[in-house]
Image 1: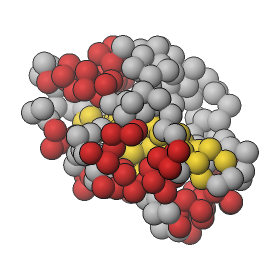
Image 2 (image 1 turned 120 degrees about the horizontal axis):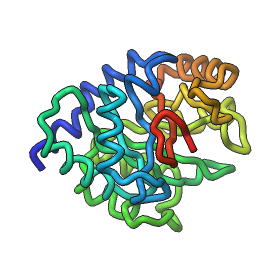
Image 3 (image 1 turned 90 degrees about the vertical axis):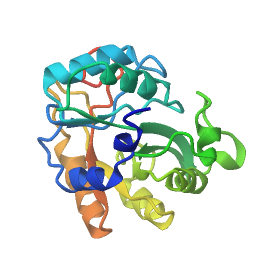
Image 4 (image 1 turned 135 degrees about the vertical axis):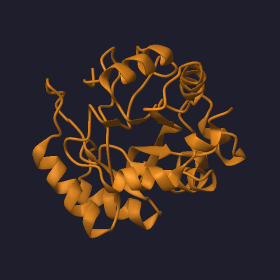
Length: 221
């Protein structure tokens, strides 16, 4: 596709993540959104139109185990005379990070990389492919920046999970996240402070996203 290289520009994406702040999302950047290509309600094309209406500068669609929404969004964007919005490749993968299942986000990767094939089936990976280390390595092989999604949402604390993820090569954490679906959207203060402190201690990148599953990119549900 014409914007393939742009969608995989991880140098620019690292610069964006390095400068992410609590107020970056949801009106400047949004790196966690779902379409009806996984478990969201928005058509990819409608998501893009809404992103432009909001004034977003950079986004990634992170459908579960699929990049079909990204392809449709990228095709739509190519038909528009718009250069104010940057769309990166994105995905969310369910993986086993002992002792719990977690969600791994990948950004700026080549979706045609063969290592990603087990994670693009539209279903949760099984067997050895479900191991977090395997998923992280596959994403890295495709050139991705790899991030632990909403680290304070699991049955184990971020203090336990983040160091384990770091040992497997994770690049960042989803620091700015609204755990209780507030309206208007705002990162949960206590969890944000915890994740940010841990991320800084391991020199990780920080990301933000609404985790939108509904029809409004400014909300989670």
